[in-house]
Structures are given as C-alpha cells and as structure tokens.
Image: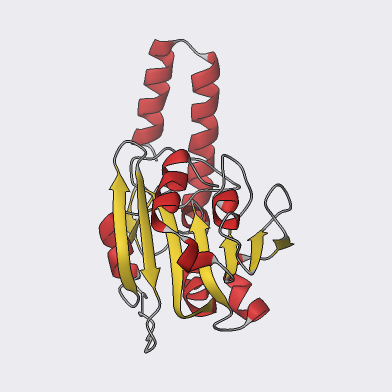
Length: 226
C-alpha cells in the first residue's frame, strides 16, 4: 500500500545509487492503493521481492512480517521498504526488529506510516498510529538520513541507514497511540480489540441507515460506554 504522498517521497528519497544492482524487499507489498515498485524497478535492482500475508498485485511471496528473519536470515537485503504497513501489525516490535535485522550493514530502510488523525482502515485490521517522534525513537539505532511529515496526508516518511556497529534498541514498554484503545499504550488486549470491532460495526450501521439526529445520539452512547 502506498498513497501518492508516499510515492512522491520515495521518488525524491531513493535513487540509482541506492537501488541499481541491489537486493530489494518490499514488506506489505499488496498494491491496494498504489506502489513504489515501478519507481524502484526503473533503477534496475538486482532483485525485487514483494511479500505480504496474501496473494495479489505486487505480491511475489506470502510471508508474515514477523517471520522475515526466520525465512531469509540476517543481513540479506540492501533495501527494505515498508509503506503503510506497520499500523496493521499487532506486534509492531517483532515486525520492526525483523525489518532491521534482514537489512545488510550500510543498507537502507524506507518506512511510511499514518499519524494519529488518520482514519481506521482495516487490511485486515488496523492497530497503531505513529508520530515523527515515535519513528525517531524506534529507529534511533539506525542512522536516520531523512524524515518528514505530510500534515495533509497525515503521514510520516523515513529513510535510514543501518550502521556497521548496529546494536538493536530495546523497545519493551514503549507506548504507541492505538486507534483501538484511543490512547498511548504498550499493548492491546483481546478484549479491547473485540470492543472496538463492535463499536466499529455499530458506527457503520448508524452511518449508513439512520437519520443524523439518531446517529449522533447512538455515537455519543457508544463513546460513553466504550
């Protein structure tokens, strides 16, 4: 997944020196609303592998993002791309650790994530929101070469390089904003997820069927009793 702002940032941030002849993996590569793949492939990478949890446009291999290191081993790719994906993984620490560890020393990781005010969008579910400060903290064990925020698109973009003396951050206990619980939290419980699904289902019915006044009353009730 990759919106226009993501594609534009990728085109500005990634060039021939980063890509030509290099090994590239895109994690969360299913093309739902756009992709960086054609931009990257125009610079003739040595290989390009798109992985996701289901087959579809842009997907070459089914692989869970939390199992990348087990599947490929450490230091296998020169460029790791993950656009509009990290909000969809419940165990973000494990996935980010995998992204960092499959990257070669001096390799580049390119990340885009939605910020707090971005709407819920389940593919298949949606858990987290990131601010620029979160990305700086989470990836402070890499050399961040560029980071930006698009306030209109509600996105944060980052390009970082893996140093030769890489020592991975311990992110245990770090709190992210959860769209499920509506607060910053280190974890999301099964109960919170179930409650969110019910609220989201009710809101969908309310938005599609009832008059505006009734919608507002029910929405207030749902929020009050969440």
